[in-house]
Image (cartoon, rainbow, N blue to C red; front, side, top):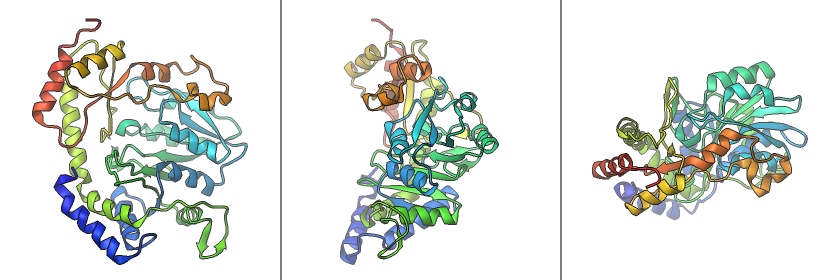
Length: 358
């Protein structure tokens, strides 16, 4: 990926270095403009990382002590940490077993008078069921903040993930579909007042230098990372299309009763940040693939409620059986731009030859 654009990346770095302007400059403003246009929102605010993107949005919406925020039980811990960092309580909801995303049919039973927001996660690059989630949110007067850290460019009934809720939070961690060469993040929204407040929150609570309206923090997208993102954004659709091509081959050609493929819901175009399958003997399957030269990953081996960090929530094993089953059975197959047809053929062949327990 980077070899194809290495000259452009190096030139972007040199231009930024020679400018001697490294925070809140033209690279950042250019990226915010182009990224908001690409996603389909009016405003984009760059920040330090994807976790900060959610934290800043929650703070700007005045969600904090005593409030509850609904999140999926199957997600990276950053989603929960963001809620914790503002003093609110993450309330977990089990996902669907076939898509790995939050199950909308289980959201309403988790709503209480303290609930202020829902954070659906577009996990592994497949958008959550936003029509159902938005309907529930509107009926109960709740904010929706989309955790879009893994779904840059994904489509739900023709609209980009990140455009449905009050705001969408993105991560530009290097491994993302659109990744910086370090940490970075952003929030997109159509609400001007919210955008201005989020920007101030990430700038020590200040809209005007040395005038601090909020108890903010330091979380800004630096000029060097913005410069790299400006180079990479025009290539994102091409990279995503290649991921879709690889996923289509996996979905149509992997035929093994021991390997459960993900389900793609109607009207959705995932970007396949992760291609996650499930199998009963996950460890044995992973060892089998490794012995045949195929590297895999696990996303994620421990659900939120079973982490030591969240024992204070009072959940126990068995409270979220679907999330636990996914954590016990999920394995992520090779999925990256540059995976050759020969490599794809090999992965499919080896998986189809897998015999559980042998």
